[in-house]
Image 1 (cartoon, rainbow, N blue to C red):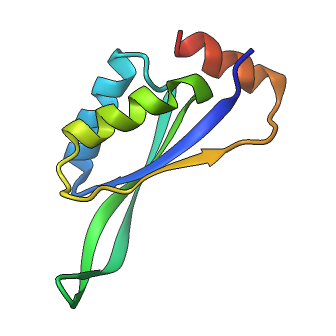
Image 2 (image 1 turned 30 degrees about the vertical axis):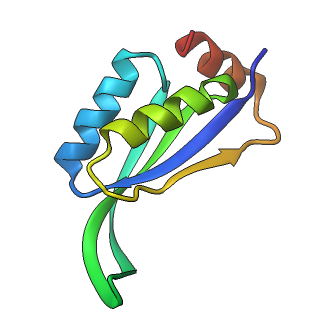
Length: 104
């Protein structure tokens, strides 16, 4: 059985996040997404910027990582999106089964 993996990325708006998450769900690249609006503080062209954005935790199977990363990068509206793989060392068997079955 494959291992569950979390992928973290951010989006400029809730509408944009829902659209991309819906696409990834339809393609069975992810089993679930958790979206949270938050305030981001970062450097852009030498200036400190503060904006509202949406963080997304995408639940998927480890074997989807390479293709998922490429898909997100291709359709993401940010010039330099954050796309982080968060390895899960262990989880309950029911969750592992659900992730793997959902993303087949």
